[in-house]
Length: 221
Image 1 (cartoon, helix red, strand yellow):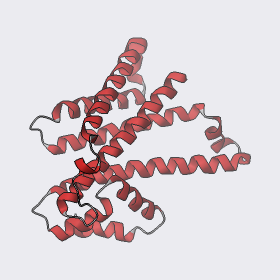
Image 2 (cartoon, helix red, strand yellow):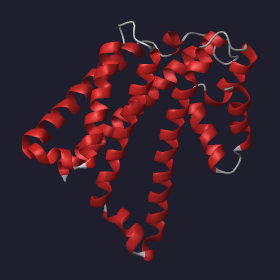
Image 3 (spheres, one colour):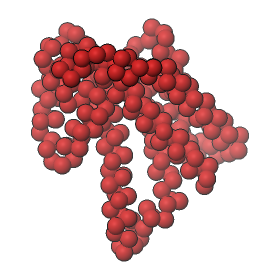
């Protein structure tokens, strides 16, 4: 149980590191688009961020590779019988491809697919829910309505963060394509240009104000 909890913490840390990296790329893209709030390059806005991101990519890759090797050694053929293990293995392969393709002439679409595949590792956090008594009371005990509400909101927040990251990665090719109209790209950037802006947009969508966020995609992308 403690090992699963430790791995879940690593997964959460990896997720937020990916979120920071997408935010950084969005800041640079906003500068290139000439957005009114992005007046300096991302390298000046977050100095030294790229080496930090590279370090964490490598560190998480080593950590998750070690975890997979340990599980294979302990479980052997039973490793393939658990869906979570298969998801972890696919995410690990995606991380390896992404890390070794950054400095090679690889199609950016492949890198985006790898990042999306790595998001599936976040599902591992749900594995820990069985060890949290307050979360298990969500389905068993109405008397814990306060804790139930908190865990429900946290669960929705995780879904919102994942959705925001996926939309950011999906609209990135459109924003980077200079053949598209500058004003249209800027309009899409206002809603989905950075991770933090996309989170705010998804927050509006969840509260039924979905029309502007939807129209900006259907009209332009």
